Length: 611
Image (cartoon, rainbow, N blue to C red; front, side, top):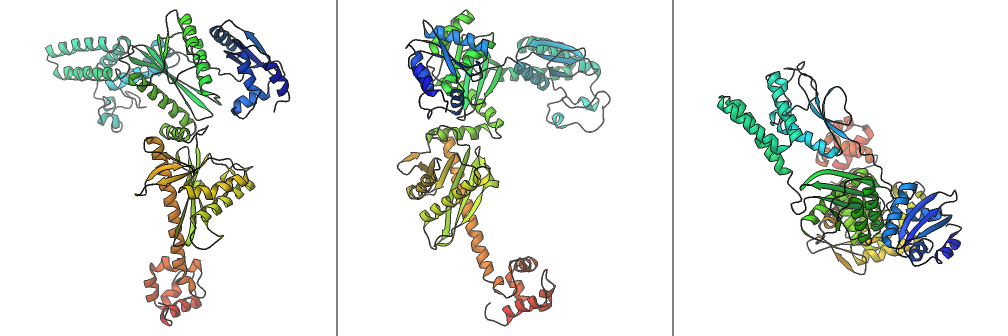
């Protein structure tokens, strides 16, 4: 804890209940955080009260505060403007700081005998360059369209040097490449294709279609029917591509869509930018240790439009913001026209927000070796269970036995929504005989967290605490395990997975009530997968134990025959029946056998009544 906490709180409690900006300084007199507040006293005093509700980033910031200063403003709006200006000036460590590293992009038509069309960052003397464009997304999309429409080669072959060398690639066979490598297209004809593709890139779809239609008419009049057919196909391809670009935003032609996906610690902002109803740019910003989501969202909007000149009239966001009016006013004054921020609840714009958020989830998930759909399911599950962070590391347990015999348990782990089989563990119940699933679950969790106490410094295997524990069972299993966690001081959310009459996942319980899952599709699928997997693993271990004991009751009962010889005999002869029917010499020649062992096996099956 900060040794100056009491002093800082006393000073904070003397602040006025007026709007303003506060600046946190460390002992080196560096500004480490700048914030705004409607009421300075209420906001600043929160930092120096109880630390229980603060995230780790805020706790670290507070720990490093040596003193703070403040500026009173006439309104919340003035506080916001001052905050933006000061953050830009001082770049404090604990504020969200976005780098304007978005360089220009170009479309290149190389000056080779058989030119290529590519996306480039810098122009040079190796070809014709179209641009510059601020949006790399637009350039990449345009190049991809031109390549597909005009069936240009994307392979690494060099032309004309590689004409006729090797077969055409898959793209030719699926009609996505003109097959230049075959050497059957003249330089003049290929030059015409490149000219048409360049016109498409420079003029856009509508103008290039008109020119292509004129060329098709001329070719037809000159009885060049094959050429006319090729141009007809290109026109159709351009129109199809144009239709695909009209996927979005018929309702609002010009807008930015901003969405945030957070796993409770890190966050990813995604910005979709639309003009004329078409997505022309998208940007992604990943923020480590995000902190409070709503505060971070407001700060992101402020920072983003500080580094971007273009501000659309409509900004669609994924949540209601407390300071939305101040942000709208700041954006309006900055852009010189009225700007509206809107958090849709349904309709087309809500669909865009969802799509934007899903893309943010995918980016964040990939940064953590997962996939967006898994991360979305984990976030939904965490919210259902009232967790503060996404449960990325989940342990699940199940008991398996047959009338109290071969009593075992299985532990599985799901990391980032997928099975982590290297972390699976098996338990043989040791503390009692007979069937008692509750006592079995108690023993297993006790042993598991006793191992945690020994290995917690490693943060690996049993030394790692899960974010969530799911037991295959209901109130009884929860009641059996919760005292274990409490007595050991283990603070991990604990829930049971409840099945219906058809042994399908129905709900999750904390021991006092149930949370129905079926209306929450993503989390329902995830929990169902976990429950099925832990049951499969536990029952598989149970069957393994039973088979081993059945095996042990026959061959390993023979004097001189241990597990290794028994396995080798069964592998060599295939079945117990074949071993029983084998001659003594055959038994002697089996792997790892000698005369005495062979004689013992032969006598067991022929001189006793044990068969």
